[in-house]
Structures are given as C-alpha cells and as structure tokens.
Length: 435
Image 1 (cartoon, rainbow, N blue to C red):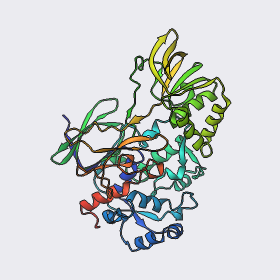
Image 2: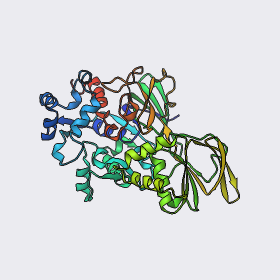
Image 3: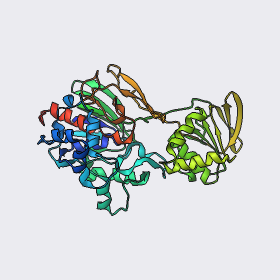
Image 4: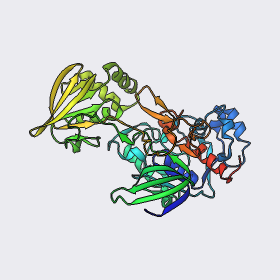
C-alpha cells in the first residue's frame, strides 16, 4: 500500500462548491466593506456587519443562523441585487491571509459537471450568478480581454475558461490534484482515511484528514435504464454535440433541461428526433412554457413542439423496454402508454440524469438523508447537516459542500454558498480565527 499523507482538510470535488472553498481555505478571506446597494436594500444587516473588524469567517454562524442561513447571508453580500452594475456593489472584499493545510481531489479538471455538459449549452443563469465573489466575472473578463456581458446567459465554454483560471490566479494549483478519483472514505484515528486512484493509471493514493468536505455534486452516478441492450455501441450515455451522431434518426431519452437541449439541437441540424419521456405532456410543457420567455433555447423547443413537425416526435409516459442491433441500425422497443412500438434508429442518447454517490463512505453510521427537489425536476438526496456550518448531523467534522447540504436551494445562485460557513467553522475549531 502507498504511504499515507496527512492534511488538516481534504476537499473531495472540484466543482462550483469545492473550488471556491479551496481558495478560501488557501488564505483568501472575506471582509465586509459594504456597498451602497447592500446598505440600501439590507440596512439592518449592513449596520450589524459594519461592527465586524476582522474576517467574516469569524462570525458567530450559529447565532446568525437563527435569523438568516449563512448561505443566504453571503449570497446577499455577493448579489445585493440580481442585476450586475459594477464591482463596487459586492459588499465583500478578499484579503490574503495565512492558508490552512488542505488538499482538493477531483477526478477531472476543476469545474465539476460543467466539464461534461453539451459543448454549446447555455447555462440557466446569467454569468455573474455562476461566479465566485472573490473573482467576479467582470474582473476576469477585464484581465483576459474578453468581451462578455456578465448579465447574459453564459455558455459552457466561457464558464469553464473562468473556472479553469481560478487555481493559478489564486495560487492554489499545488494543492489541487486533478485526475484523481476518490474510491473510498473510512474512519481513521486521525479523522478520515481517503483512498483514491489516478484516472487512467489506477495508481493508488491514501490520505488522512482531520476534516473532510464532500462536494462531489448531484451527478456522480449516471442513472441507467436497466434494460437489455443498454450498453450497445450506438447507445450514448450523454450528449455533447451533433457531430458525434452521424445518421438520420436519433432517440433522446430524458425530459429535463439537458435532454431538451440535445433534442432541440439535433432537430435543428436536420435529424429525425424521437423524444422519449416517462412524464406526461403537462409536466414537460410546464417546464417549457415557464422557461420560454427567459431562455432562448426554450423559446426554440416551444416553437418546434407547436409546429407539430413529424420530424420531432415526443413520446410521453413512455419507457424503453429493450434495445437491439438490427443490421446497420438499432431497434428500440418502447412501451408508449401501454402500446408497444418499435423504432429503427442510428443512435440512442440517454440524458436521464444522475444521483449523488454516498457509497464511498464505509464504516460510518449511515448518512441521514432528505429528498430535495424543485418544480423543474431537479432532485437529489441531501445529507442532513447543521444549519450553521453544514456539518453532517451524525458524523463530526464531515461537511457537505454545495447542493449536498440539507436546506440548500437547488439554484445556481446558491451552489457555492456553503463555502464561508464551512471554512469559518474549520478555522474557528483550529483556533486560527476567533468568533
């Protein structure tokens, strides 16, 4: 077995929850500076925070949580209004302080699942909602000479370029291990024992840590259909771009935003699209109609559906029963509202989402979980955590980052809001800052 390397903190996951925590633990601490917009909208909060001379990581988070969740407090400091006007509206500034010993492990580049969504995908939000307060997207654009309206929806490429610059920009590259997949987390006399493997070489590493932050996101395990033929070569587990799917006929299986994007983009390049969903028409149309006036690609799919073009066929309340090879193409058997239908296709694309992976934890009490969902079928099992620090209620020093913490809203404007309460709690426990 490899030598065991010890760190005070290990972060598992390099997405929009784990990455900002790395920077803050790396010494970039928030201080209240106030802003005209924050004081105008939240005068009582501004008056209270004005009395704080030190880092906001030293706040009494337990006391604050009785009135406002920490995730919401830091969201308001970062976004005192949803529209970005100027850098001065952000009511925090960040100063470089002494870092704590930490290591971040991620199986891919930083940016998490955004590395794997369709190439041309527009996010669901304005760019500045996806940014970290210590590095506003407007500042990033200025430093790199990028012409970008931060209030517009941001595409995957621009967002990833932003995320990928963060480790070097804030001096954290040496503390972040990419291409390293965590495969097991166990109790240890020093806290936690983490076992990982290098992606590709399978080289094993082991680490111990006093504190562990689990920030792997909600799509660690891709869902499966669990039907015969699901692993045939013409069945894709995800969608990236139309060029990956030659031929004329494609089945898209899903019903959420990523599947909507794939079905729309494939139709617009001339494919015959069969869009298979378990949900009824009413549920899907509600998502489309609620989004069509704010998201351009939902205006487009609404237009396609209303055209009733036979080249775009929606099959609601339908289930794939089996997938077979049929000469040079594939044959897909579908239960369409109780009637069997066989469709000949060139490709099957599965955009059926994923789930958080808690199976890595071995030897602990079972994590207490609660189901969280929103009106757009974004759902996952969150871990029950203390509301003031996002520490698991039954496993001391285990923190849930981002969406995995109970009570965190499933909206992008909240996904990195656990950063400050987690960092503050760890630093206060270590006696590095005073509450």
